[in-house]
Image (tube, rainbow, N blue to C red):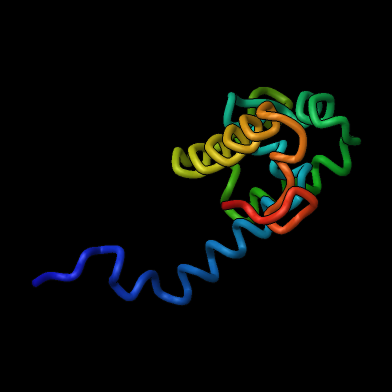
Length: 123
């Protein structure tokens, strides 16, 4: 009898550390919003600042952290930097999570609360 893939040892510790670091970066609502916007298409820092409601310096700092981690990249377009997410897996994870939570929020009050929060544990 062969073991099913779900029962194997799982990912190596360093992979889990990298995943935790990535999720840690995305735990900032502003950075998550930036990645969400960039998942829809490219943008410069001015456009991002307008859409997230942040100052240019603050959004630039968030972009620098995301870029350093390899979650976004920039390319030059004339005198401005245009930012983008070119990792389809990251786009999928962010869209799935935000979409799922948006659907829960649309279902009614209390559904979008964090597990163990005011709405209680998620079944």
